[in-house]
Image (cartoon, rainbow, N blue to C red; front, side, top):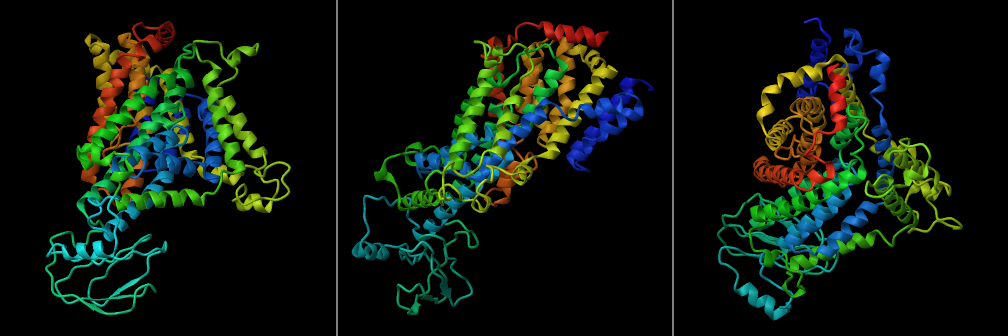
Length: 607
């Protein structure tokens, strides 16, 4: 069919196949419209090139500058450790604490970066739990109320199970000494307070070389090996469940946090730019309105996801796993809290660069909120010309200042260890808060090109009339109520995004859903916003999104665990999003009416 609609549809299908199959990198596939549209006569080369750099590109660049400063000066680690210290070391509260700090960080950083930052901290805590589990196999039942002395320890050794033999010792040093075994199996040494634990069916000789105990060969009688996992790194099944629960909670919390802000994830940016390009007269999507709509969704999803993971891996005994009482803390929990406090102490007192980064963080958020809040005049009303200043203006301005402001405290003669922990700041007294290398290390150029490719596809669909043609083919769905159309769209994108990348999936579906909404005379926001949020719920497989892959690489969870837990999280997300768009989303975006800006777009597209 030698028509513009057919040519545009061909380009769209070729790009979609490359995105879904990932035969080439996503960024490279996004360049397909740049050469096919001019060859087919859909758009001029200069017009296509203009689509690859939009307002959201500058917005993302400013946010990455702030993220680079946060990561460089370890502000993210201070925030995460502080929130975990507040939550405590009880398994339930520990998971909730990590989820809260991950959600908060993911609001401003990318989901992938947040997961990569928080997961090593969580892994250190988990390893401490595992080590203390080896140190004390009955730590879950011991409490701080019963202090151990020599007689108590000897009495406990007399009452050990006949099928299990434990060798316990306490080491006051922070590094466990080596233990040498002269049998075929070895006892692994842990970090922190360590323990050697082994039970064999043959006579075993253990020699301690820790400098505290005499080097004496100890012979044990034959004992029957228990049926416990011989090669497992976890002391008990419960420890394995805690590791699974905490690992999965971080990737799910990163996804939830990315929903809250318009810059939280790339799919939000793709939606905002495509919506504003398609409906330029609609002044309804900004940082404030998006936050007001999505923040309750995130809070509800956070609580329900925590309850679901707790039920799935930790059971229903919330009193045992969530108590803040110090009297109910086990030895393992005390040692885990000690490890967290030690990690926080290594950061030292808060430094001058951290203070500057925190001030910029708060300032950027306030300026975004107060630009055009909607219910009161924003700070943009102070200028004569309207519409010139966007969220990207604030983002780029503050990002530029981070390249300008020195990292050393002004009027300071020397660089103290607390304020200058970076080599650049130590060597150069005028070194800025961030350098171009810091920015370039975090800047996701592939996402920028991917987003630009989506804009180019949307522009081609608009100019060629393909979006109108698609809308006409969907007219038989006009008998469905708006909530049914939205639900079908959410389920469809949630299923597709499990196997394809989130940005690619949304880029393909946004023009189709926009045309469908115009044809059915439904407010486009009624379908576009829920679909944008549900496209982030690809949490059932490691390939669903990068945070899943990062968590899976640590080896605590299996694919079956991710599928089982992810299905529940996916279901929770779809239900909560549908609840939101049907309740507080209606008055916020005036969803009961087909808006004038959509009518104007429909008439123009038809002509």
